[in-house]
Image 1: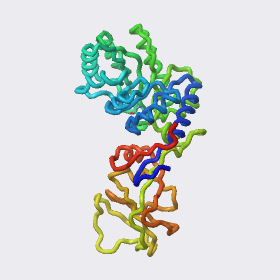
Image 2 (image 1 turned 90 degrees about the vertical axis):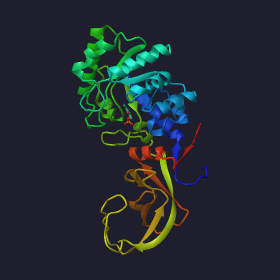
Image 3 (image 1 turned 180 degrees about the vertical axis):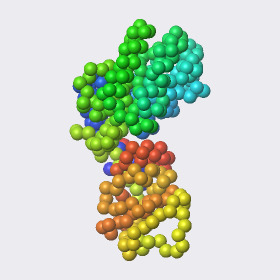
Image 4 (image 1 turned 45 degrees about the horizontal axis):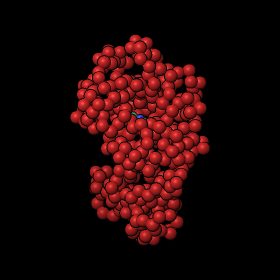
Length: 358
Ligand SMILES: *Cc1c(COP(=O)(O)O)cnc(C)c1O
């Protein structure tokens, strides 16, 4: 293992490759292509290349900065901007992404303007509102919407998509996927175009995948969490055959001591305006880590070592050390949920170490 100061994220590229390969196979068996979503790893080019090596052709990211980084590093993929663009950033969007997800006429008009200027054809996927109430064109408006953009120069509508189980917590069921497929049929029929891209969702679509006998048109799913954490996201169930331990967060002990389990003095709010309570266990063995809320969403951490997290502040996590073995300089390992991973990857204070690179 590489020597490095904590805190750091340790990401096993071989396990990510294995997960990607298997997901490509599982979805491929039902004629669904995978878009690899790299936002949680900030568009790291080495990781993106690992996804393409495992058979992924489309890389989706929510941030144009990440897409630019991957492109500048010669990652060989079609880049998809999966957060609908800022109207004031259309020039960059056309410049760096091959495809963008869209829901706003005025934005698409700007994309058209810059596509003409840059002498490019910019491809778009229209997001359809299917009940989760995040981004999406209302189903009733979509024909009129397309009518207004179909003749825009420099723009090609290549598909439609939807996003479920995100904001509103609505399941991507077989019925919802049929509904989206019907929207596709209607559009194709009315505008005499072929939609090559019907993108039905994200890591929450795994149950749909297993239940579906595929009498619909869904041919793309966008996966982030399943690739990196090895689970689906309706119930956070591990997916058979995938690694759930490809990524760890490692922190270092900066103080270890026996102290009371209950704070002493008059009670007040803590640094975050919370009223905290403690159970009296007498004196306990405590350890403090040099890792805090500025680095990671502490609620999303699960220690691998035999310790309990009893609290945290901006710069510290306080542990109860059940085995009374931790001393200063020791490392403590955590598994991360998606929120913890997203925050730790985004923290400039947390180093990122990729192991088992090919
Ligand atoms: C982040 C994101 C995804 C990937 O979601 P996971 O749950 O990580 O698979 C898919 N689509 C969109 C639009 C996203 O923003």
